[in-house]
Length: 245
Image 1 (cartoon, rainbow, N blue to C red):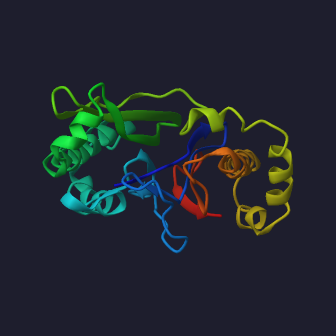
Image 2 (image 1 turned 90 degrees about the vertical axis):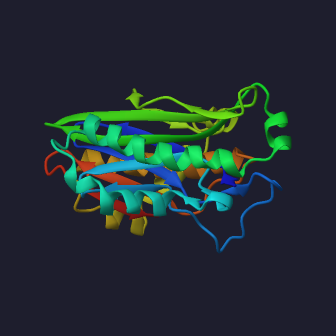
């Protein structure tokens, strides 16, 4: 089981974004995943929606892997959804991922449940999209209940932005001196040039999210960081695009 993630959700008059790092660590050993191994923790859905994940990324015992499960859902169920509003698509997505997550229960031994009698967060999903020009973000949560030996969950609920999800202590340090240096560095790099075609305000929140995740990684003992993947959904075109920095 791999975890360790920082996710930022935000929007302004030009765009909405989901930004997520690409590293993780093993729940069993606490050791960082080898540098050559990275995880794609956000995906574009149907060219107009975005979904990101925090927490469990992979669970080998039941063949759970986030990107694979999302791709499977897009290929088998997405086309049949009508109308394709953010709330409706998010609800259908939750049902699919819920089946995959609850299968994890079968791969957990007695000692695991004993370690978490009062519960433990397992995974969160954040969903984003426009509904007739209005930006909407939703969050769904899954967690262990050691007493019942079950995985419990909530359906997607509306999420206020800006939202920073991850290690609480390190996220508090995002605005320490250093964030301006990171923004300066990215604004004058290939990152800025790759965003040149986006509206100015879309560029602004994208650069801000990338800088914040890189600064937060300095303080996060869960070894987040690496490549930052950002999905930008433009308001004017209603198009979602993935950028990697």
